[in-house]
Image (tube, rainbow, N blue to C red; front, side, top):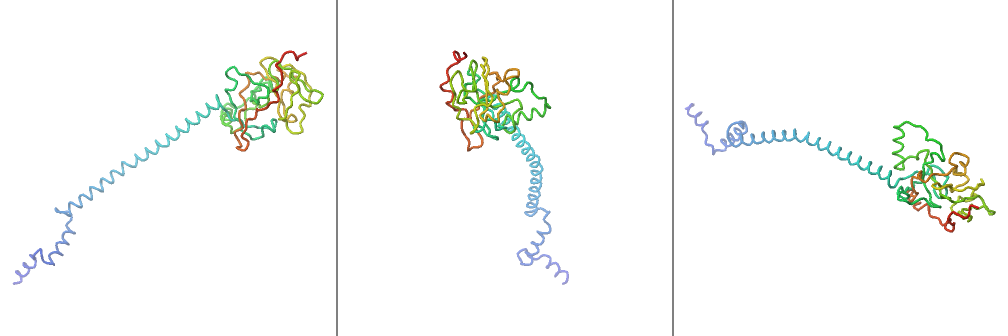
Length: 287
């Protein structure tokens, strides 16, 4: 009886409540055996392995993508910088005004846009133009020496209008061109060009046209230049007794100050003036 009872208890029907509970426990315990539970677990493990595999591959891929993005950004930045430098070198250069010699037309800290193509195709500076020029040989006799690397970096910053220009670069107004006779001054204290008095309304308020008398004839291919703030400008007048006589060679002109680009409230064309409109061509006024 005891043996039979135990045999009957082990062979309970799978449909009985107790059997169902036993099967449920058996399924949870024996998940590694054949059947639905084993297949689900195998799939889960395969998914985990695949996920780990994808993660191992995705990590380097993301890093490579990041490096490519940085390289592209760096290449784009370098390309833009080279383009800006070339543009400022050959076409339009920002020029930082370092002194008050051209006040009130140009103030300290103004950035003027210098048109480097203005005199490249047979056109020469005219009276009244505000020009930027290299004063080597006229305003300074030789370029100051400097460290090549420092000079290169400073030149790049100056080309972008971020630093003061080279010590040999100047900005002045053209008062006389080749062949002109420029005299200071007539009985009313005005400068004469080819015998015609010039009304220089652009001068700094209170300044005389010149406290230094002079009477010169500008050689061909050269310019007589002066600052608008005559009391605080070292210009052609100050170099009369030096080699070159203070006259600037036309081929040393870097370009014409076309526009004040900064600050925004001063956007204007600095060279516009009708002061020389009635000045005759050079010739009979030399006397």
